[in-house]
Length: 169
Image 1 (cartoon, rainbow, N blue to C red):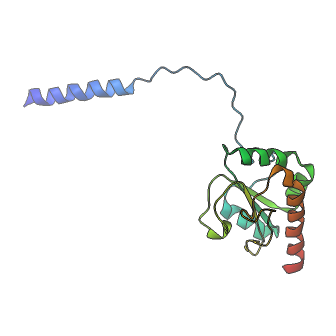
Image 2: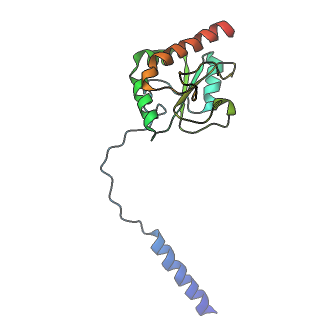
């Protein structure tokens, strides 16, 4: 019996010492850019971290919420991100008059995908927590989609969201 216990103990010690050895890895030489909540959509802007936080800010500051749904590896999202980040008028309006949130995942709120879960898409929510389904892009099959060439339309829709805020609330 003592031999059996010693055998099991020897096996456990051998396994734990083998598992405890760190694997030799070579450090990566590439430089990593620190990840911010902007994810490249406008590093100087103040971004909400979660949908719930964005709703709270929208209500407490009485500003409309603009939600950008995108994916990091989607070429359409990447192109829109570049155009959005480079458009000074959109950046200024977003900074001054909106609560902004960008998401790389879907929320549980079904109202945020009224015509499907595609990316990229941009939706507006007013401080009363009403999704503004009437503020759409130019496509009939993807109502909330924008492309890099649609920056003037997006700016116009941002201004509409502000106008609704002043006239309806």
